Amino acid sequence: MTFAALTFPLLGLAPPSLKRLLGGLAAGLLLITACQAAPRLALYTEEWPPMSFTNNRGAPDGMAVEVVNEILRRTGQNNPIAVVPWIRGYNQLLTRPNVMLFTVGRNAERERSMTLLGPIAMSSTVLLARSEDVLALQALGSDILKREVAAYQGSIFESTARNKGFSSIRETGSSEEGARMLLAKRVDLWVEGNVAVAQTLQRLAIPPGRVARVITLDSLDLYLAFSRGTDRETILQWQAALRDMKKDGTFQAIHQRWLPGEAPPLQVMRLGLEP
Image (cartoon, rainbow, N blue to C red; front, side, top):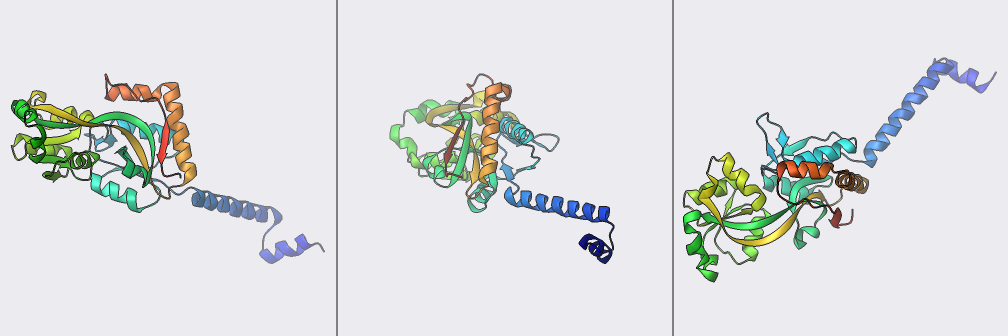
């Protein structure tokens, strides 16, 4: 009697049934291995129109959201995007592996603690005031540093204002709160990214002429940021997808739809921590 003839009766299986069992076990092992090899990426963004915001259907929307959704489509992923307060998303980025936060301004400090992929847009850090106060504030020279500034808590705009010497900074929970504080005369200045100013005022039904730029503090590029410990292969897949989007014109079309008149950044760079 053969070994197979002994084995099948002991298992209570006919040979075809055993083959199906072994095939199922093999498929299951492959699935487990794949899941272990590529942990699911947690995606976070913030309310910062037009780059990212919750639309009237309750879904994430905006220029950066469209870019991320297209990358997900091209890489065969369906990870949900969570719109959260900036400080929460940034904390997740700094403390957990396999987290991607967008949109993140590039600076030397961030390059030491995360992997940046992009840029997906270019922005400037601008100091804004009530239109009727602009000339008087510009005439202050270095004394302007003593004036109170509203700044989005934890943002690169807040850190830029501090690095430029502003000592009286009122932290806000959103860009909209900063605009409201300025127009309510609770602060003299509001620091923000220029790409977000018009949309922020529009959402508050504030005529754009009510606010004007005092000075540009800095220019910066905006990136997708991956946390320390994120799966290397995942980052490389995202990099390849973004490069392909810029090559075939998909990225430029998205950029033009949301930021008309602004030049789209066409290079693709991976900066900061090596994954």
